[in-house]
Amino acid sequence: MDQEMSFIAKISGPPADLVANILRVPGDMMRNVVVAIEPPWAKGIFIAYFILLMVWVITIPKEEMRFKLESANKEISLRPFALLSLTTCIVIYLVF
Picture 1 (cartoon, rainbow, N blue to C red):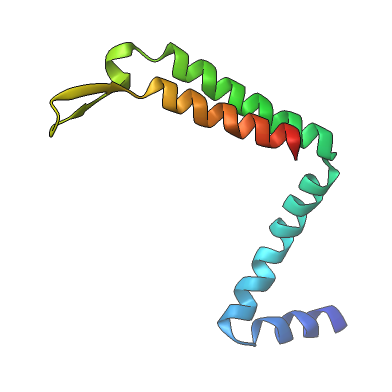
Picture 2 (cartoon, rainbow, N blue to C red):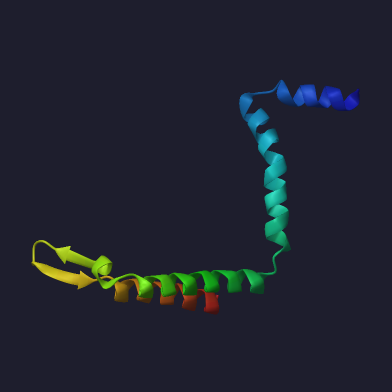
């Protein structure tokens, strides 16, 4: 009976409280999963993700990695810029 009363009390409040109470359960589950991952493993997962992105950028056909500047009538390859930014992300994760 006491649990029934607390449930009724929870759903009788403002709509934001109802939504917060509904989302609390999956939120707590997701938090527990994230907290269970050790920091070195999390760092490794992110570094592996950026390496996977680098492999994908390298395998994209050359024609799809070009950007044409209309004003200068010149084509620029975006691959070096993408690889530089991904390398920077990896270095940041390795350092911090």
